[in-house]
Image (tube, rainbow, N blue to C red):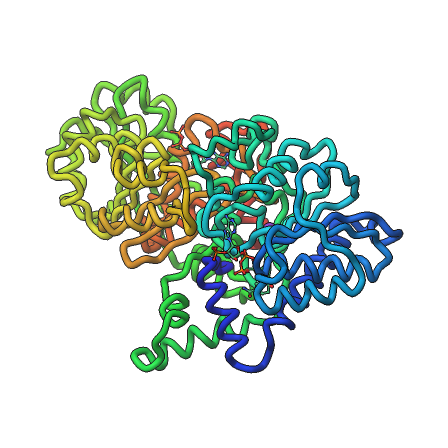
Length: 566
Ligand SMILES: NC(=O)C1=CN([C@@H]2O[C@H](COP(=O)(O)OP(=O)(O)OC[C@H]3O[C@@H](n4cnc5c(N)ncnc54)[C@H](OP(=O)(O)O)[C@@H]3O)[C@@H](O)[C@H]2O)[C@@H](O)CC1
Ligand SMILES: Nc1ncnc2c1ncn2[C@@H]1O[C@H](COP(=O)(O)OP(=O)(O)O)[C@@H](O)[C@H]1O
Ligand SMILES: [K+]
């Protein structure tokens, strides 16, 4: 799993590298600029065959400094390069200033002026206005130039390359910093945060063709508008990974001695990207997947757990059947659907391997759960909010590993006892609407216009939610965030080359709930079960492709497992 950094963590790593004396800020800037240029030619090899024209937009900080390096390197390759600067050259920070001066030896710098920029034709636009240091909404010429680029994107500018991020995007939240009441906005073509997603229904490019970031991806590259605006993400090595790792090790070894802001920032619990298989690690030995996943020849079905999935009333049983099928396909030894008497015929007619037991009342549920072999529980899909309200206290009192989804989440939000009955082995799986019902204040905070950076993010909201609920929370979406009360947090991103927009189909959430329940029954801890299920969910969708309906997801899993070499 790749580690995602916040802007502050990245700054702390950079500081640790420079403080070590092994590398200077200027060297890092040179590597960053070289990395961007190399990424441009990797992305468009045809650009390396001749000389083209670039416009480089430089900002007042080190992002602008990278821009001057890029301008110089392209010029060295015979390109025509036009450079605009937003800000006062005298106020540039030292490394950016040094690169400004190096550029000035070979080329001109014009103050950023949207009208002039509009008249300059070019093959590549390099956006080096703001990177991790953006602290508030863009204004003036910076705002109008970004707006100009966004408005003409795809027509005039098909190769916008962003240094670290599209300028104005907060790399902690994936949200564009904006002033909702800025009167200047009325006269501008379009803002980054207003680009219509409907033009790009399949997770395509919303703004940049390429975004090049340094050392590690940042949370904002994967959250919210981030992927849509970044287009394609490349991470280039600038040789600071030892400092990233060492600074963390130092801090752990000498906690108490090593103080200061950098130490605290790096020590913050990390956010991981669930990107490669969480089941099979990259350097896997053959034994590992067998231990973690495969079934030992000596095993019997109870070794792999036995989840109970609670079904809704007749006409509403499909959701629980989807969950049950997913739990079975993900490897639970056997799966039982707890079905109300009046729906037994309907359910029985549509299941074969899945078992059925009648559960009409919460008291019967309690009795059924005296069988300790039933080691995981799923309540919510198609269950009915009122029924969920009646069953929930009994379901939670059984202290099984429990997934609360759909109607159970709504019932939980309406319950008088609130989160008091939840326990550490629960997993809540809200989509945005359910999240709002459960955590209205956090949802409101998340919906507020992001005026200042770092803006409140889905990671922040999910972490707070998990703490409050005292259990793992999986907040769904193309940027699914999974957080647990200890601060552990991961993003399962179905974006960039992992986009799976077909998952937005009725019932796919029920399948996800079933996958988590099946993995809990197999003994995975809640956070790991949620991560693994979310990852498999996207892999199954990608393996099937467009045309997917929820029923296809469980049936696609064997192919996913086979592709993993299991
Ligand atoms: N970390 C690393 O390892 C490496 C980092 N590198 C590069 O450095 C970049 C980070 O540089 P950075 O910290 O100087 O921040 P950057 O984004 O250039 O802007 C900050 C400036 O903008 C200003 N400002 C902010 N918002 C504003 C607004 N709305 N409107 C107007 N002004 C605004 C802000 O001023 P202030 O907020 O203090 O008023 C400050 O002057 C990073 O993205 C990467 O490209 C690489 O070179 C090598 C390795
Ligand atoms: N555009 C998208 N890209 C990837 N995954 C998505 C997208 N939209 C929704 N999903 C995923 O699909 C599932 C939908 O769940 P949910 O909203 O509960 O739907 P339902 O109630 O119909 O089952 C979630 O796992 C969510 O993360
Ligand atoms: K930028």
